[in-house]
Picture 1 (cartoon, each protein chain N blue to C red):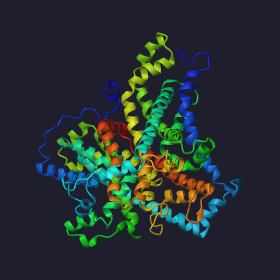
Picture 2: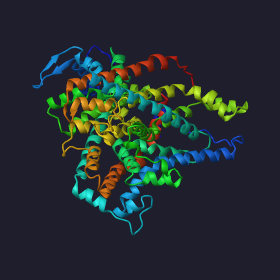
Picture 3: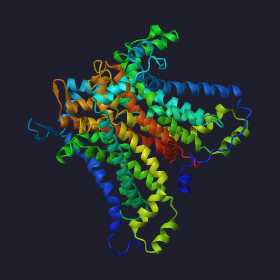
Picture 4: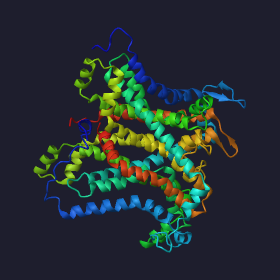
Length: 297
Length: 307
């Protein structure tokens, strides 16, 4: 990627050249693969089982759960039922709005705060950084009693806005930390040159800094999207109404209700898994880079 | 230099304000307010009145409450112990294998094994419920294949095994996190040191124990505290598999589900925000003690090698 990402992510930088090492006997290599393959099967088997059975007829699900679907046993009845008889698409829309909404706010406000903390010297700078960093270790869930009262008093109960605000508050501490770390590595000359030309502070941030920290933004995006998309607690408490339900809450209640309708349950589970699988395929490189570079610090 | 002219630096305020306001309103202040609410009680009309430590006295010394609280605390400790004994060592093992030089397919393995971590706990919980259900028979069938069919039992439903089973499911899901953190730390171990050790004729095992492991100790400390905070804040898995009552007979009750029931009520008992706040405060103190222990005793004492 760009110079900035390679500066910070020592871990993700080029792997050292492969050295053929005789003392690493082939036999040892095979055992390593056996262990890793074995673990990969354990990790993937349950997910594959659900996906495979979701496209089978009811009889086939019970008679032979481990078999792949054949032309005989193939059936999309579960998906049809879920998509026709439930508000699944609505829940998807809600999850999407909530996740992307909080993501946008986290990235924008996180970058602005990260820039302020890393660029300007002012009284209380370090104290402010520490204050924001506390949220990384203290789970926001512990403040639920008061958050609920606040949301009720603001008349935001059962709105997606409430969820967006809470997830933004939850995601900001880590975002500020990662982004200010990146912003610190931007060469001084760039900003000084702009200032000499009389460019204002806001223009410097939005037109020079923001485009430069794109790799870090991708990392922050992956870190904040997944917990927001998967959360059960706050949708359950702040927005349980049918119009504002997220996929995670929807699935949780759906599988409780239709627990005997196996086709529908498996289809519902698959529908809830697929978006993350797609996202993972798209972002997996960035995610791994983010995790590895973020962790070294 | 010319930033701080005589005029008030409004741009700093504008840059900081949105983040600080949202974070304060929806995270920091609610947390403080929750700590405050723990000292109050509310009557039927919802009017709060100060009662000092009465809520805490009830939770810790009233026979019903304290039994439930300590049960949840003990279960939570067991839950944490399962993660420390299995999740983190397995993560360490996998990461060590990935980081072996020139291992083919390392990236693929890493990507695949990390996948369950991304899925919602709700989905994971239900998938495992299906697999372990005697009704469907997948778990039992698989065990018969390897000749262990007789040992199969409805683990999630039994008082003696439910908590351990849930712990194992959670380990299965989250092993990717310690794996990645440790992997990143292993990648940062300087190549020259390892080359030198190989040149001296040190075995792979010795290099692991005497060079790599000491160098990644800070990361292992971080993994421990992250596991601690996540476990003592856990809720979703138990709630989605066992419901708010954390059955059978509260054997899977942890602080998160205890907090939920106290706050929202269940069956005959009416929920109480102020009692809920007191439980949240106790959880806060537990987590704070963990974090403080980590920062003051572990992280400080760990030797930081300059890499």
